[in-house]
Every structure is written in C-alpha cells, then in structure tokens.
Length: 309
Image (cartoon, rainbow, N blue to C red; front, side, top):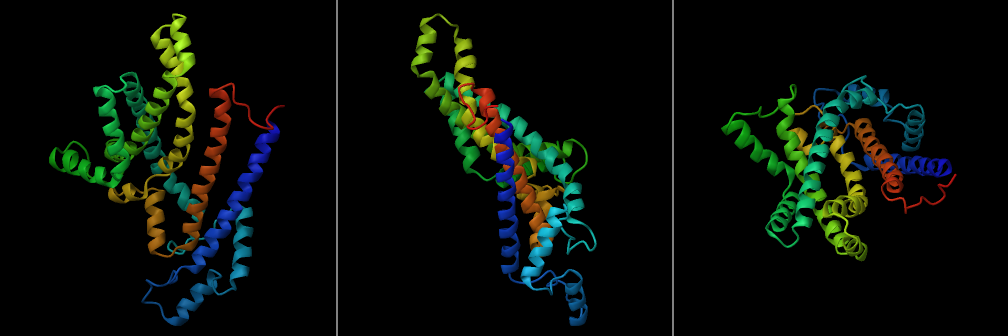
C-alpha cells in the first residue's frame, strides 16, 4: 500500500508539472496583455510595469522563474491586485467556494441516492419514471437557468431569501440548490442504473431463495455494489463543487474562486489564472487518489495492484 501511494503521488507531481507547463505557455499564446485596460498609463509607465513583473524577459526565462516559484510554493503576484500574492487570493476565496460546494455536493448526493433507490425498487413503476425525468432534467438544463428561476420565484416574488451577495446562511440556500441539481441528478441516474442491474443478478436471486429479507438484500447487497460507479463520478464532481461554480458565483455575487477566476480572465491576470488552474488540477488528482483507495474499502474483492504490504 505504501509503495502504491508513493507511486501515485509521483504520478500526481508529473501531472501537475505537465498542467503547469501547458497553462503557462497557453497564457503566453493569448492575445493582449495585463495592461490592455490601463489606458491612462503612458508607454513608459507600461514598460516599467512589464519590467517589474518580468514580462519583458524571454519566455524561457519566464518559464524557469515560474517553475522555481512553484517549487517554493509561490504562485506569483497578481497583475490585477498589485503586490498581492496569488496564494493569498486563493486562500481568501476558498472559504465561500468550499462551503457552497460542500453543501451542494452533500445534499445533492444524499437526495440523488434516495431518488435512485426509490427508482430501482419501483422499477418500471410511476416513481421510477418520475425519478428518471427528474434526473434527465437535472443533467440537461444548465444550473444557471435554475439559478435564475430560484431568484425570480423565491427571492423576488416570495422574498424568502436574498437575491444575491454573501454573508449569513440564508445567502447560501439558493446557490446551494442551484448547484446541487446536477450532482443530485447524476447520483440518481447512476444508483438507479446499477441497482437495477445488481438486483437482477443471480446472487440476488440466491439470496432471496435463502430467505434473506428484502431490506437486507437491497441495502447490504444491492446498494453497496452500486456505490463504486457512484464514487467514480462523484469524485470529479466534488472538485467542481468544492471550488465553486464560476457561473453560479457570478450570478449570486459570491466572492469565491470561481468569480475570481472569471475576473482574472477578463483582466489577463496570468498568475491568478495559472494558480487557479493548478488548484483545480491538484484537487482533482487528490480526489482520484482517494477514490482509488475507497474502492478497496467498499468492495473487499478489489485489490489495488502493487498495494500489498
């Protein structure tokens, strides 16, 4: 197990290195510069700013300096917020995004699993068709559409919740609902599909013949085996949820990472864009590692290759 984890950590570092390299050179290929919006600066002043941030250096030298900073945990200085480290910007923005994403993922997964179980138990029944329709709508309609509807109905018309901004718990309700629709629909679809397949297998028939109660068959045998594909898809969802949705944060004026990323793109703030990209990539590879480790806990028949100690 130790060798397996060590090997995966090595692969994670290689992956992050490749992503850092690609993001750096892709940023250099973008048109414009961080000073495009600074019309009041003279050409001399712009040259001084470019020199300050090392943008006048040849691209290879900039790349080496960038990698040197990454090794030391330095993501650079924001172009938009002068003399403000990107690391501090991301840390300041992580709180709202993490809270909102965690709530959306937790509530969405629980409801999705519940809908999936109900649909599988009542296979080809009314509840099955209803859950399937909800899952299809949840995966096909963009979350910003749900966000707009929630604002109109529950904030503007009924006045139950604030339209936007961030502060109290009530500010998180509408964006959480808008964000949780997709993970809820995804979890319901996967659980329903796997449960229907598992419940029709031969060992379930054998379990029924032995007189095992139906609840025990559903939860101990059927539901447990349906968790593996669910965890596989929930992993990547966790990254996007926990770091916040860019569009949702913009709609509800939430000061999270997503909103910061969008603003950085418009401002050509290269260090912040690359830092946010690396953060997404780091969270993704960590989640994938956790998923691989959870496989063996959920299903003892699964053995991680090279993980025997």
